[in-house]
Image (cartoon, rainbow, N blue to C red; front, side):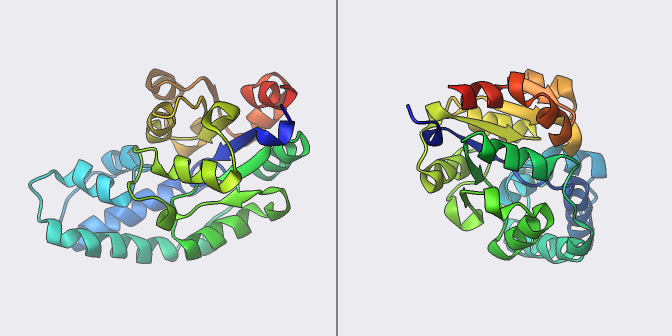
Length: 226
């Protein structure tokens, strides 16, 4: 099998870009504006879900669903104020480029809106190594459903059995497991190693820099070696 038919799918928020806590703060502010008192810790643990599922998860199925669209819009508006502060994690750029140099197709499996994705890609600054990318418009159902990963596979012309997924939340691991894709998890998004392993992560590193250091012996290195 040609190595280029193998690939890596990357979650972006909290995995390559240091944005998870900005998302938590933006959701907290959105809920606050609608007079919902939701602890920041609970919000952070739900970050990684799609916005629709995050709202249902935190406010319950008996909530006033007519607020959902405005809550998501408010979150997006508040999060947008943090765009200038978004930076890539140490090693993120190098990891993406290392994967490409090793012959792996690199696909950003992002659920961000198109405009937001452009901001994230600018912060990552590795477009020369990226094969394809997805956005929220590519998935009918959000994580932990696997739709965005299915879209990423299609975008990269890849098969589930030929890829590894790199993510930072239990929702990433759950989504990938539905397609039998092994997940390499990183704790830099704020989720502990124990939680990620319990969810089913095959490997866990503290961040992209440590995964890059261990590339040769990681699942990524094994995949590239065939």
